[in-house]
Length: 478
Image (cartoon, rainbow, N blue to C red; front, side, top):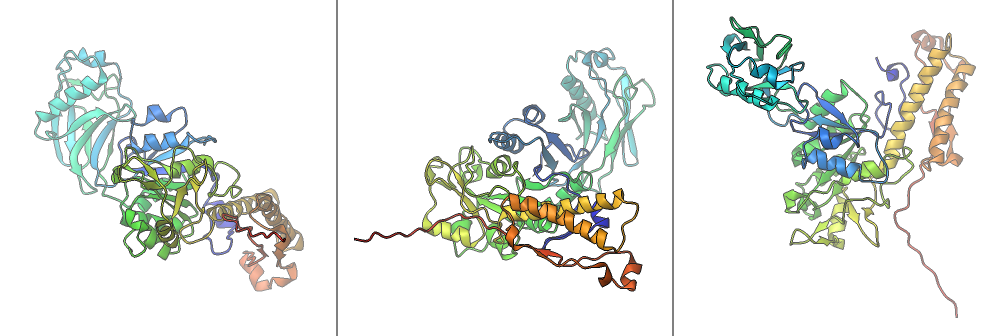
């Protein structure tokens, strides 16, 4: 049970927040073996990502952009998205990693391979092996000679675990496992491969399902990103995230976004859904468009904008590193400004985009696809979570909380505290606070008998909107 199950707080039309301890931690979903299926996600830091992740991949380059800004996120989550059906496999997490131990066995060791109801003894020849990669290759060679595992592979995964992968995919695939053989030296003994576990095959999933699978284990990430999704998958992902108390930063390179008459791009479809928790950055600097390298404006936003106090910094007008204006020349190299017509089309479809009016590159308006400021949406989630957590702490700290004026005023004080925090961050106008807290006498006996204190529409305030443009007129008098 979450804190919010006991103290249910919502602001405006936003959904009741899930337990959210941090609002600066991102999750990047990718379909890559850097994150094995059984791990679901891995946490990387500025000092670890280059060794934890495969060089030149989306996730490695994204992390480089993330930690290439002026601020340093403490961590980032790289999540596994099962874009295509995955194969069943068997992992030996405690295998001895000294290759000479296996080499000394030459061809005398075995293990029993099981797939569904079928079993077969496998006899690798480790003669001359000097590395664990060679040990895995010897196991794979033995599998190739077998009937059961002829199309299997054996390799070290991204955690350097010996992994035997079957040729069967999807949830209907038979699981693969290893056990003691009928004869010979038992490779599953603690001195060799050791204990193992089977990971079943999984069917292809949506980006939203991948995120939910991770949040069910660890709800820490608040900022969601993805790589590799199609337009339809991005739209579905936006729908899924907007049903949660998270935000989504999408990067779109579909040039149809610049066409005011086109309705096939992600921006048009997401804007039509009025999604207020999705930010769309349009950029043509992507290898899909022929660019020499991908740019990662979502990572830049997280590193530069979202590492400061929640809601205090606008997405717009904040200088970002490692990105350029959104337009790309016909030579796929030259950075070109978007035309006024193109910008107008992007604006109408809910896109944000990168501009360099002078010497710095920044986003144009910092608005969600649905039109609200992203910083305000983040601040709403932040205040709702903090009120929920602190009211719950108040309930725990007191022997009993009742339908009394003193307890009602204590709750008001908590709300006021966090409203003032947002006022200090230029999110709320403190001169516009309106309170509608009930008194103890407003609660009927029937209501008290439910033991649920419902406080509806008890507070409202005007948002302080950011300024992205200034129109100034002056005159001289002769």
